[in-house]
Length: 135
Ligand code: THU
Image (tube, rainbow, N blue to C red; front, side, top):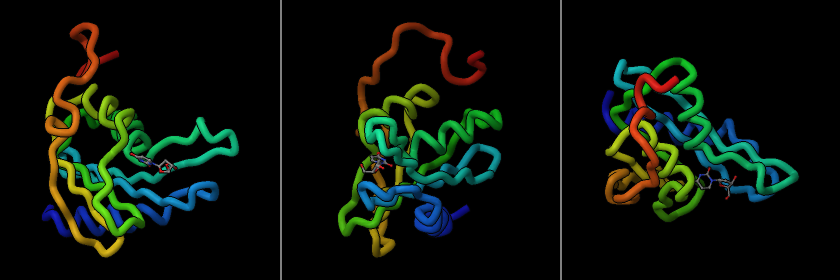
């Protein structure tokens, strides 16, 4: 799959956002090793701290279907800027991979590629055993 298609999937995934409080929609499209694209969006709650980011929802969906290995992630917002995943999402992504190309997509559909490793060079880890094959 080419980058443009993945970018379009992330832009479209914003439609699935439930963001009545922030009005900030985020769409994620995670390209898995098997070629499947897992889409997700942010899910807010009246108890604001319970809101879940698009990226973490995408990880949950992917792992639920046993897709531990990924090729690329695209994250789209309604902002004119290139917005990176928050620190919590970076840590959750790092549970499953040491590095991953991440395409940041702004509201105009423009793309800017970064990497998980550059955004979180030293993720928290306590012991081996996580990631692929974890219980
Ligand atoms: N949000 C994401 O979906 N991903 C991030 O990496 C950071 C923030 C969402 C959470 C909330 O619904 C809205 O953006 C505003 O913070």
